[in-house]
Amino acid sequence: MKKISAENKSSARKPAFERPSGRAYDELRPIIYKPDYVDFAEGSTYLEMGKTRVLATATVEEKVPQFLKGSGSGWITAEYSMLPRSTETRTPRERAQGKISGRTQEIQRLIGRALRATTDLTLLGERTIIIDCDVIQADGGTRTASVNAGCIALALCFKKLLDHGQLETFPMRHLVAAVSVGLVQGQKILDLDYQEDSQAEVDMNVIETDSGKLVEVQAAAEKVAFSRKELTELLKLADKGIQEILQAQRSLLKKIHPVFIAY
Image (cartoon, rainbow, N blue to C red; front, side, top):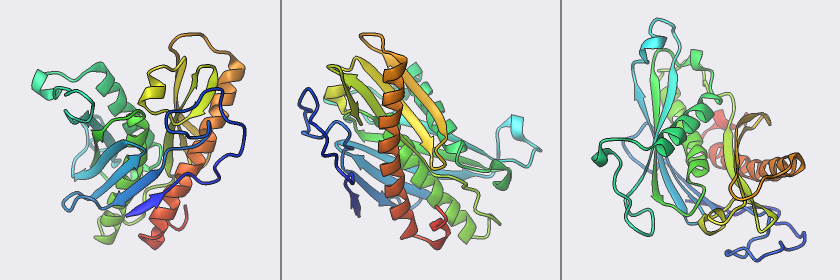
């Protein structure tokens, strides 16, 4: 087990309101990664970000979607679900209801886009990597935690394929990380938990590669409109958190295999 708490805790002034966790406004929740958490998956990671807990597994299928057949290129896709008691009251399983919610579809596509941005798909051959992200406990930031866990599961999957001679070259070109930021009672804060998210005036999710390029920005005014200046400041705050998450990923992966030293 590897436990990584947010480094360089800010000595800046306290926020205008007290965060429920007592964290500084620019402080991440403690991060715990447990790689290779599942025996049978080609890659897997258990991740805690505070009280949010996600299990990500990678599965390899020797086929690609119809639109990629004959192209020589691979594909990465994702599925996301919340276990019934990941929340305070039971959430029915979506598949039992015969349909997947719009929220779930949106998150699945977001995770897939984020992970495809890390990889040279032409090096995969015509195979598909499916990343399953299951939320065991939800306390805000489940989609960002799923991206962070999915990145590690994907890297471990590629390592296994490389070790078994199924890949000639390691196809992962970047790490990717995600974090939430927002405005709560007028204060910009990093890595919102559920209590903060539920009262946020602005809610924003940011995904970024280790090269500093943005993959996705989701920002919405929940109660009041926000300015371009506030948008820029929130992006800067998100970048600080993402750099800390990326460093945690690097530290974990470099201890697993030399192939990850390049990150």
